Length: 188
Image (cartoon, rainbow, N blue to C red; front, top):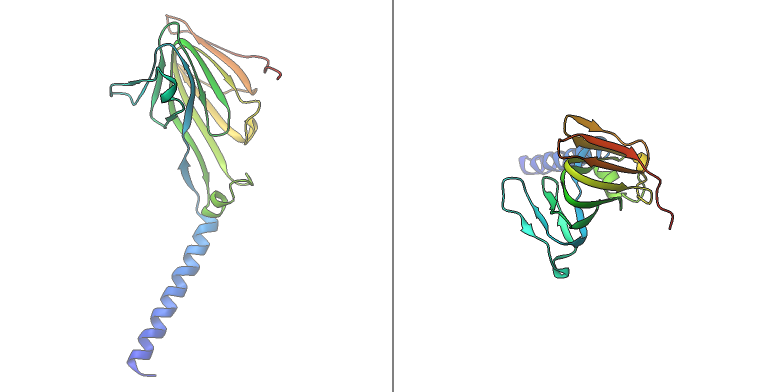
């Protein structure tokens, strides 16, 4: 075998080895993929933006639906209302004055699991929301993946609330005291 042929064979071997390594990585290494929410309904004065930036007003029907990305904040002024739909069709209905910050919204899995997203096996879902003011009603009774398959955390002033049922309501008063309680899911 001459030098040229040896180089070709060695190159093909390295390429085959890389392909095998990529296939092994695709079925063994997990990584997160961020998932956006969507503002689907607004009434009154509602603003959307990242902390530290001037929020954009969402006042007319032409601005809805609007994407809510992890790290963005939705603020509803007194007398207003808004509905947010998360990646799994769970919803949060804000009654102004209220504020919601989408901290994390993701699914974690291997490349193979991410491409087979309809089969939720092995994929971990996480949703972390910060609520520091107002009244928000959360509803995950028609979610897909279902409520039990998503790790949900709501950061409140001085505590983290982890819901135990698919429908709950959190009210935070002017003094920053949170009242989180399970509520019956509406039947439609």
